[in-house]
Image 1: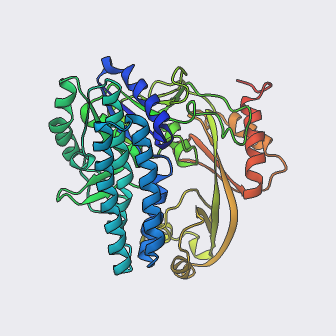
Image 2: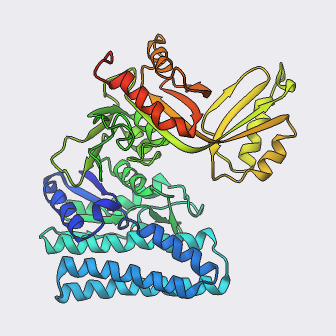
Image 3: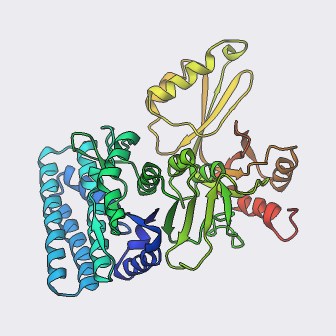
Length: 453
């Protein structure tokens, strides 16, 4: 049994959906369970509709609903033609869009967009795409059956970033999904969405379709989880920046997780956590190049000094300086409790005897945070920063790799340098404008023609 997940670009239109069905057909002997994202761009469109409606811009929101309806109905017609099955599917999709229009009207009256309402609207993309994929599979001779993910992916009620309940998910998967597999049918679920035990719709957060696939694979003890996207796999660097970026055929779980957290968008950062716990290999494949070797993520991948380089932009660097840190017990605890109280996530940390520096995302609300932090000491804020992550399970061994990285960055102003506690990620904070040139230099140092392997 395997779990096969298709991202938004892999089900973007009728042609992409047909390619996805062909991929599934080639895996029927492995008992596939299929998880799909919304059509590319659909979730953004749905969230924009919710925002418009809640601001009272109902006419604009309704127009956007109709545009999205026309897009989905066009793909349904292209997949099934104008026959009875096609008309039935279009009627089902239109009923969902009628529901969306009613939600938009309600939001325009309320004038407020709660997290619960946002989840109700954001979930519609996967509900629609999973119906489209099931219809296409049946048309192409695959015995598929739709399973409402909200009946399987049981979560708590933290709307917009709900926490899955693994035991409840495993029980539901055994009751609703496994019997279909045993009857040689292909279950198809929407990713990203779930529901509370009371049946209220939730979402796992953006990128959560990968997470859904991994949770389902872990619940049923799948032999592998396949993530089908629009790139050939995980690469040694961002190919938009580094023309010579190379495919990584095998990579370790911890390295892949670090790369995902620091900007390698092939994977959702949480995706591989359930797979790690169960030792299930995760594959990354390109749906436009199904014959490619892809990337295999396992515990047994080769240990390398550096496996890849990732980057993130839109970083803010906060630095606290105070002599009160010197020989003071519990100071850092108080410092980080302020971030927890304000719900602000910290990425990179470096400390000295009288200062502590951290990076956070540009979009965070800083006003209240800074007021509380200033009670501890002097705060400086530097915007327009970027962070490079040089990731490898052996980067901390002996210092040779770190020395090579710093040599490659000669002449680049570095604001913060930190080696992760696990010793697999050397994070470098620098000016945002220097991020791309620095990535090129680092990639050449570790993967260029003259680089020492």
